[in-house]
Length: 363
Image (cartoon, rainbow, N blue to C red):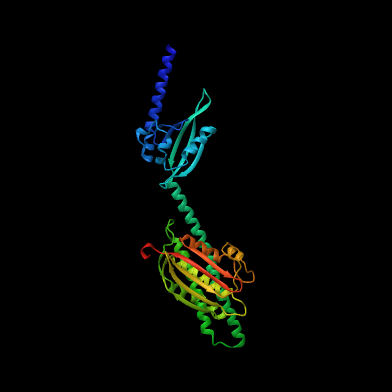
């Protein structure tokens, strides 16, 4: 009789200790029995998931919506069935992140799982920080690729002009010297802009990325024309422009790089016996400004259209290039919530359509 009384006292003390623990812990915790009935929860769990005292003793399926994580019952059943701890990061429907640990509550004498204890640790801020860091790393990688690519282009232009100067000197014909010098100045100015953008980015606050602004497409096109002047002159390219919608919101450096790559490619990928014919348009389609660059160049087959946006993939090895330009274009457009589409046929030319998301205030 005395042993039984001592056991009861011990159980009462143990229960009081458990109640004291559940009352004072700062971690959201639940105790669910083997029949999936909610038996206990800590005050932080009450706060996080808006639980009420009257929920105790009710089947978990009646209150699972409070946890805003619809797989919770399935996860509990797995732990009860296997007796193994389940640890996972989850996102609830209110967009918060938790480290969820489900531990089996094992009755030692019977060697069976009689329920689970679930712990939730809010890691929303940590996940947000990680995502911001990933975004910053991606932005830096994209910037480095873009800078390397954009510096290569004016250097190539200077090389072309230098070759023309050498030919003119041999022929002792220097009438075109002022134009060629002007082209060199434009290429140098483009290089200065790229380096200037790099320095601006380098000295900005570490957690800041380049800001989007309202930009006139006409000004971007004029800048690109000046930069590509040697190529346009050498190839005798004809460029027709019709912009129905001229204002877009974008990062200036990135938009310039996008337009430059598309126009430069349209000039480059032309049959040897033809002068480039390029048509540049912009229209509004639903929530997008669609900027298009169409050419009558060599075109591509279906497989090439798929590969062309992959990094370091070049489908025409007879033309100069590194296979990075269109990869950068797609990356920058996608990062801004837009998309890029390509229509092309071998021998008929290509049409690149860049869908730039409009600001809500402009829709």
